[in-house]
Length: 233
Image (tube, rainbow, N blue to C red; front, side):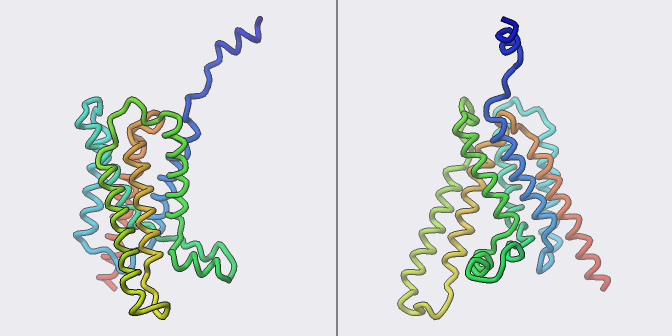
């Protein structure tokens, strides 16, 4: 009897908790990769300003009361923008140092696989589990997610079309970069599908807004220091 009572009293872990942890881990890895990456060529002052404005706006927006629908929707869109910016900034450390020489290393180098790629993989797989456990249930549809997926799909289609159209001209003598373009587009689709769907949801909430915003501010600060050092040098 005591065992039955104890099992009834002890609360079970929230459903989808491991998946939510994976979402946070993936986004933190993406932020860390962007902070670690050295931007070559260095970012211009206007680009640094955009990163700073988006990062600061994200943190301020997250601090507001998001119980109003338009505020919550705007925060999800802003998180998607921040994640896309970090995706463009995250290109290190590269994965070639993780494997030995050979065809695998060549493939990783061609696809420019890095810590950001691993972050998106962790994020996307965790979001699939999160979605399957009802993380997006009873919530408004993710804003602009269909448009983001359609854009990525169009990029994939155009890359394949260009490859087929130009193959007869160049054949296998030249690298058309089709595989890299498709790989980048798939990462973009996976990233935005996960971020737009999970942000603000159960066990995820507004926490990513704070560390994604902080990462953008950190990249902006590091880039500004590098810009000033280059000017002095």
